[in-house]
Image (cartoon, rainbow, N blue to C red):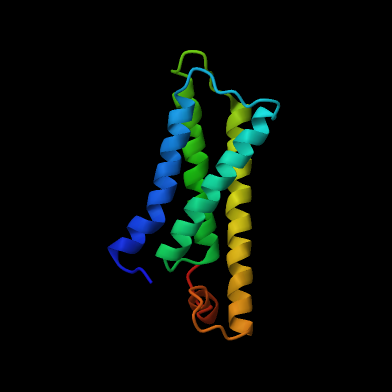
Length: 146
């Protein structure tokens, strides 16, 4: 299992690369979503970002679920805001409050679903006494700071 600085590199590199991909796509004059609703694309894209950021924060801190949720959601929502602002400077693109709201909804959904998944895995790991689970440290120590 990774520990120390390599844990941080491993956990935060994927969200960083994904943020770079979002930035690059936002820098394109036109991005076709085909027949898919634009807001749905924003929700799915930021849902994945929310999941990736939540995973990184969950496994690299000793924070409680509330703090993990708050930090992850806040980062993703602010990144969505910066993305919309960035698009306002790209020819052929525009900034939209509706898109930012869709980004926020996706970020919140991705964060909540990821945390629910981790809490469920923690519960099952404790219930069935699975010794190799990385999740058990969070449920065994119920006094994590919220």
